[in-house]
Image 1 (cartoon, protein in one colour):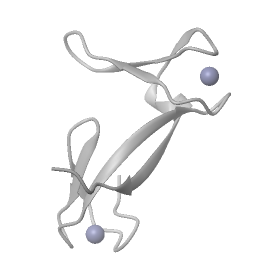
Image 2 (tube, rainbow, N blue to C red):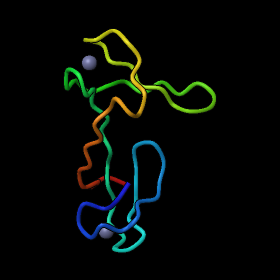
Image 3 (tube, helix red, strand yellow):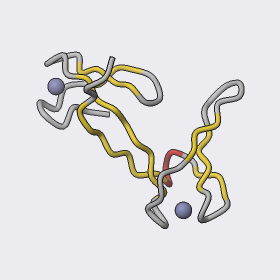
Length: 74
Ligand SMILES: [Zn+2]
Ligand SMILES: [Zn+2]
């Protein structure tokens, strides 16, 4: 994943990313590629999965749109 501002590489966890190049923080939202709804993250053990309520199914990363917005919080 790359920084929308400077195209630098983003480092971080599932929702919170920091750009290594410019230091900006980004908040990632994972929306369903089919219906556009925001998905719910389930993190049991291992890799996180994303559940779309309207579609009533799990979405893998390939079936998600990732929207990055500036992370103003901590
Ligand atoms: Zn950047
Ligand atoms: Zn959906």
